[in-house]
Amino acid sequence: ESEKLFRTTLYSIGDGVITTDSDGKIVNMNNIASEITGWKETEVKEKYLSEVFKIINEDTMLPVENPVETVLREGYIVGLANHTLLIRKDGKQVPISDSGSPIKNDDNKIIGVVLVFRDQTEERAQEKMMIESEERFRLLYENAPLSYQSLDINGNLIDVNQTWLQSLGYERDEVIGHHFSEFMTAQSGELIKNRFPYFLKIGEIHNFEFEMIRKDGTHMFVSYEGKIGHDKLGNFKQTHCIFSDITDRKSYEDSLRANEEKYRMLLDFATDAFFQCDQSTFLITVNNKATELTGYTKEELLKMNLKELFPQKVLETNPLQFDLLRSGKTVKKERTIIRKNGNLVDVEMMSKQMPDGTIQSFFRDITELKESEERFTSIVRGLSDMIIIVDGNGKIFYQSPSVTKTLGYAETEMFGRSPLEFVVEEDKINVEIEFKEVMTASNSGIPTLYNVYCKDGSKCSIETAGVNMLGNPAVKGVVLFSRDVTARLKASLLEKENAKLFEDLIIKNTEPILILSFEGKILFANPACYKLAEIEESANITGLLLSVFMSEQESAKAFEDLGELQRFGGPLSRDYEIKT
Image (cartoon, rainbow, N blue to C red; front, top):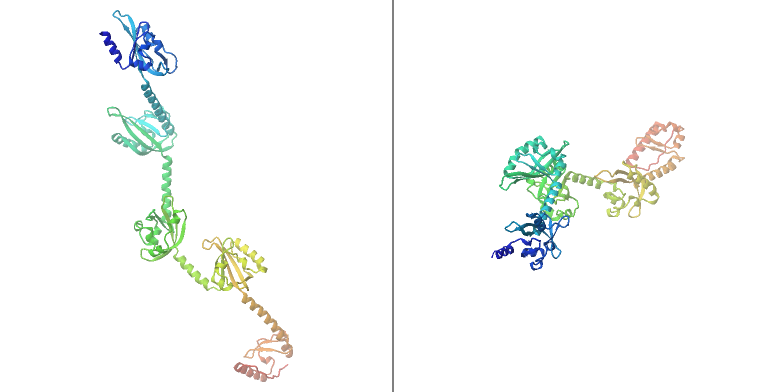
C-alpha cells in the first residue's frame, strides 16, 4: 500500500521525476519526464540515467556532469546550474532546471536518487524577452535623442542619460547629487524652485520652458516634460523627465517676432492699401492705408468680405479672377471700388494667393493718375505734332492720333513694327544711326530731318527728336516727337524761287524802279535809280522821301498820285521830272 501511494504521488507531480537505484539505473519515470525527454518509461527501465538524461551547458555546448552521479558520490542534494540544456531522444534541445536528492533507508544508506526537473522553454523565452527588452531600454535610455533626468523629492539629480551629459558638456560625477537649479540661469533656477512643489502635487508637467547653462558657459533653451514615479505603495519614488533643446526654435521665434513686427510696420506705413482675406474671401488683415482708402475702420473692414468693396454691377460684368489666383498667377488689374460714403475710387489691384490659401492684395489709388492720363490724352489729341513710343526692342506700342491724321496709318498698322520701316530708302542709313543712339542713350537725341512714306504712297518730310525713357516705370519706352515740315520746306523753296525772280526782274532791270510807301518813303531802289540820280549806291537812300529825286513841286504831285492809288488802286501812269 505504501508503494502504491508512492507511485500515485510520483505520477501526479507536475514536474518531471526520475528515480534510480544506487547504481544510477532508472527505476521509475513519470509522464512529465517522458514528455520532456521523449523516452517512455518502459524504454528506460534498467538503463543508466546517463543514457537517457544527457545534458549540456547552453553557453559552451559542452557536456555537464549528471546530477545523479554527483548525489551518489557526495551524498547531498545537488541542483543544476543555470543555462542547462537536455538533449531529448529525438535530438532536440530543451532548457531545463533540475535537482537531485539521495534516497536513504532506515540505516541512512543511499539506495537510490530522485531527480526532479522542469521544462523551462517558456520561462527561458520570457527571460530572453525580458533581457532583450532591458537591453533595448538601456540602449534607448543611453542613446535617446532627448535628454533624460531623474530627480529625488528635493530636486536633486539621481540619474541622467548620455544625451543629457553631451547636451550640457558635463561628466556624470559632476551632476549626480546636485540640485537641478544649479545648471540653470538664476531666473530659471528660481522659476524651477517655485514650480517643483506644484510638479510633485499634480504628478506631471508639460511644455515647461526655461534656460540652462552648459559647462562652457553658453546658454540653452529647453522644453521640459515630466511625470512622477511611485513605488508599489503609491509613495513618491523619483521623477522621470525629458527635455529637448529648443534654442534654435527660440531664436527662430524671436526672429519671426521681429520680422512680424517689421512686416506689420511696413504694412501699416505702406503707401498702398493692403488687404488679406481667407479662402472664403473674408478680410483677416488690413493696414492703415486700407482704412484711409475705403473710409472704414479696421474693425469694420475685418467684419467684411472683400467683394463688398466693389460695386455689385462691376462684379457682375467684371468678376474677381480667383481662378487665376488659384493657378498661382499674380493678377494685376485696374478696378473701381466703393468707399463707405458711396464715392467711387479707381484703383490698381495686384493680388496673389499665398501657400496657406489666403489671398493678399495691394490697392493703389490711381484717381490722380487717371485724371493726369485723361489730361495727357486730351493734350495729345489736340497736338498737330506726332508722338510715337517704342519699347526696348525698338517696336512701336503707342502712337498719338496725329500720326494717323498726318501719315494715314492706323494703330494696328504700326504697332509692333519699327519706325525705320516707314523711312524712305535714301534716308534710312542716317536715321538708323540716330535711332540707335537714342535707344542706347539716357538723354535726348538731336532733331533729325528725313522723309517717310505715307499710307497713300506719298512722301512726307518730318523732323524728329527722341527721348530715352526706358528707365521711367511710367513710360518704359523711347518717346519720338515728330513734326510734319513738308509745308515749311515747300514755303522755303518758294521763297528762294521768288527771291531769284525778284533779282532777275527788278534788281537786274536796266530801267529805274522805285518801291514806295503811301507816305512817299523809299522802300527799295534798284541800281538803275541810283545811276539815274547820279547817287552812289553806298549812300543807301532807303527810308528817305521822294524829294531825293524830285523838286518840291514834282514831289507834291507824286504825293497826290500816291493818295489816289491808295484810294482807288492802280494801275496809274504819270510823268515826272527827276532832278540830277
